[in-house]
Length: 511
Image (cartoon, rainbow, N blue to C red; front, side):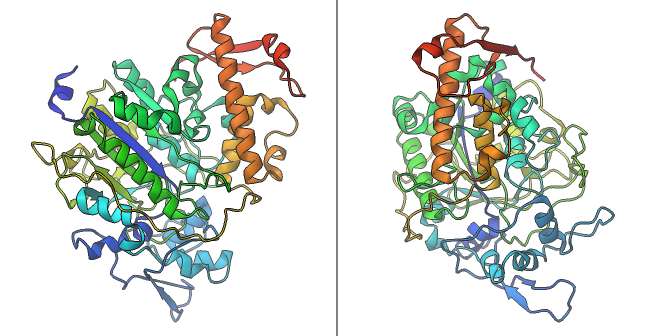
């Protein structure tokens, strides 16, 4: 164990990344509990038309509850929300944060009222208690001003490898960049991914290696048990249910999922961690991947933001990764944190450094004294180990948290069409299933797929992938290999066919 690690009381970092909500939308009204938080007062507003100086302005309210439909959060939509004008290649305006209402109304009349409202603290009681008892970071930005997948890629690799939207070619190949998971392992530490549906971390090519299959754990079967037994690894990633069915509601907070289900999920995770013998060594971080189209008043950082790897995004945007996305909620939990702590702008390592998703690899590097940064972005990002502001762990941390009140009073729509990210997850599972060689891949396979069908397909595909990996190991495949099925059968195979599968094991280097 390194000298730096020995000095840190934190031996396990737990990360939970929820979906598609801005800071002001979820935590802005927490300012009423702690005036140090850069939240909202109700004086914040957006015009319905940024080009009309006499336009009606919509003031930010506190009436959020169950949200449907889903606001816009593509690259173009986010651009208009931030700058107040529609995207054009030649434009480089200042970030006014004035375009949320206008962009929302362009999707559906009345949607401005959805994006210009946030939750009262009592409406999100689990977060109210956590913000009061522990710490909130009120200046954490998404890494890219766009939708889910690129931002989730930044969380564990400090780059999206040039992605600003879905890239089906990369879903097949797997994103090749080195991840924090590999850095953790190379330096003698451990990691684990606890999933409820097939994990999105399999977007990374290297996480598909045989040797990492034992690092994936089914959340409902293993997480609480590992907490109780004190067996949590050094880096813990928790993945939620990205799909909502009548049997199991979505708990990722992505509209139209009921945010009270997300509150229940956070409560479940916290209480399991709190009961663990490892509690006094844990730092638990809750963030959101991107803002989901919801209003936030803090202008995005545009100065001194480095491109992680000098890869320019694809046409038509040709994004240079030189500015951050919209601010998102961030809550930090540990018995080493004083109640009511507010983490603002970081003190370095550069004058322009900010908290963003690359702060996770950067902080892990510092806590565990890892050898190298992943990209220029995590070398620049602020680190949050400074939130540990006590010399001894608290003994008064709540054992249980408040019980959320259900907001959605109807059943989830199992027949709903898939969101962009849900489609990407299905397409990734199609690769694991061998269906990427078929004519239906990538678009036809998800074209008319319903949520309930997607869940069934993904679970079967992931189970097949795990079975394929087991068979490859039995047949002597190298642990650094990625197992894919060559010439997958068009029809469902029986047990005899399984024994006769031919695998193509592709050994990939650490890019």
